[in-house]
Amino acid sequence: MIKFKKRNGKIEEFIESKIITGVKKAGASDEEAELVAKEVSLKVAHKADINAEELSNIVVTSLRKANKAAAEKFVKFRDNKLEVKKQKITESYYSYYHQGVDSY
Image 1 (cartoon, rainbow, N blue to C red):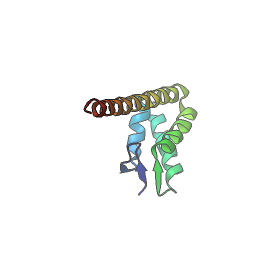
Image 2 (image 1 turned 90 degrees about the horizontal axis):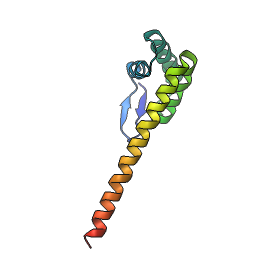
Image 3 (image 1 turned 90 degrees about the vertical axis):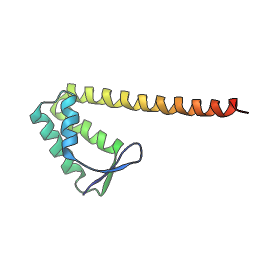
Image 4 (image 1 turned 180 degrees about the vertical axis):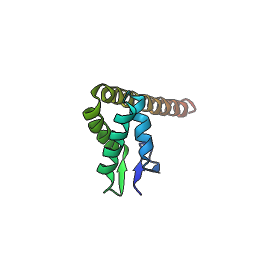
């Protein structure tokens, strides 16, 4: 079983069907999604664990071979999602920090 370390630090089992769902949402056909998921599974099969960044890069590389437009959409979605998370963390930090400063 391959362990997958999410960006938030949680460890989950690698599930091929999640790759299929993600690349289909980006615009890949059922056939392309299956192909990408199989290729990704083969590339990570020898690993005991993999992190989100590494897995995402493998997915993008494989998806680019199958459907460049879907790969670009996948990357744009991933980057936007990361930016939103980073912004939420920053806002949370500043909110907490200023709350502490104001209480003195």
